[in-house]
Amino acid sequence: MGILSLFESGKIDLVSSEILLFEIGQNPNPTRQEYALNVIAKAKTFVMLDERVEKRAREFDALGIKPLDALHLSSAEKHAQITFVLVMLVFLGKQKVFLVLRRR
Image (cartoon, rainbow, N blue to C red):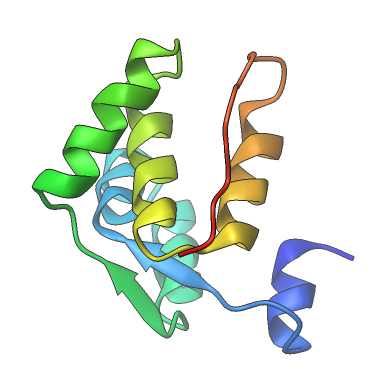
C-alpha cells in the first residue's frame, strides 16, 4: 500500500512543512509542483521552520545526512511524527543514517 493510500484510508496522518514547500518550489515541472501542492494541502499539520528545527538539522548534518534531508527529519522530530521519519528513511535510500527515535 502506498503512502497516499495509507493516508486516504486514515491509517496515517499527512504532515506538511515549510521545507516541503521550499522543495516543491524548486521543482521546474509545473505539473509536478501543482500535484505536490494539492497533496500537501490535505495535511492537518504544518511544521514551521524555526531555530529548534535548524539546530537539530545541523546535528543530523554532522552525522552525514544531506542538509535538506536533515531539515525534513528535524521537522518531523519536532512534532514526533514517527511515520514521517520512517518515510524519510526510505527516501534516503542507500545513505547510512543513524537515528534514535524518541517519544516525548
